[in-house]
Image (cartoon, rainbow, N blue to C red):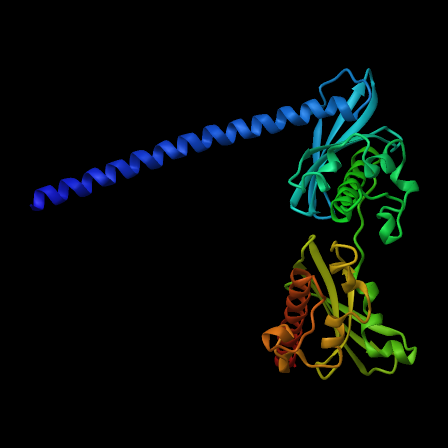
Length: 347
């Protein structure tokens, strides 16, 4: 009986190992095939989004970060001169998830053509981003992004939307904007700049109300800079703490201003890539999240949505963005308290 049970266990173990090995082989073969298919699709698209070239752009590539997502830039040559640049880019703002594009630029920055490489948008609606005559593509084709307001018309920009597919149209615009950032860095040698948090300090501290200039000392913190500010009369104006979390569309960077007593005086959004008309509302000074924190000590709050018996009002239809904002403020508060305790100990 024991021998029979032992043999059964050994047999099952052997079958499991063999099955796992077979699955691993199949997965690696499938994964390789998928990657080769993607590469072939991209190479085919290069011919559609660029004018005539006589080199192999796939061997002359560089990957850069554009608004915190990677963008791969292909350089096409015609003789000794660049014929154009193709940028493979992605957006996370699609209605049904990520959308991959390849955007072709002439050397002067004009858009030659755009092709959608992958998407999962709604058939008959957002899927029209693949059409050669869709209004979003026609808004870009033959034009230089430098001459356009890179928002859809519903948001005050120059880009026409696909009927009943505003979200997909916004995602398309977001991807092209990323591609243009990457093009400028690689083709024109322009450095990408990020707003400096220190430039927002006066706006989130009470000394600004008195018209006083601040004397600001910057320190390194876990999530970004910590700025301690004094007025010209030598009084402590408070501290401002930079904090970054991951939102729906990418990183959200805040600067949270604390009064000397530890209450939130104000909050500035330094950078965000949230959906226009939804999560992007965090940019508004009196958005419900900012109002919930302003004038309160986060250490005495329950930092959760009111629907969860907390003390914070979220932005309607933007729970991921709202949660990221709350997390950023909570991180900033913890950083402020830790910094204050360390400095009091040193004194």
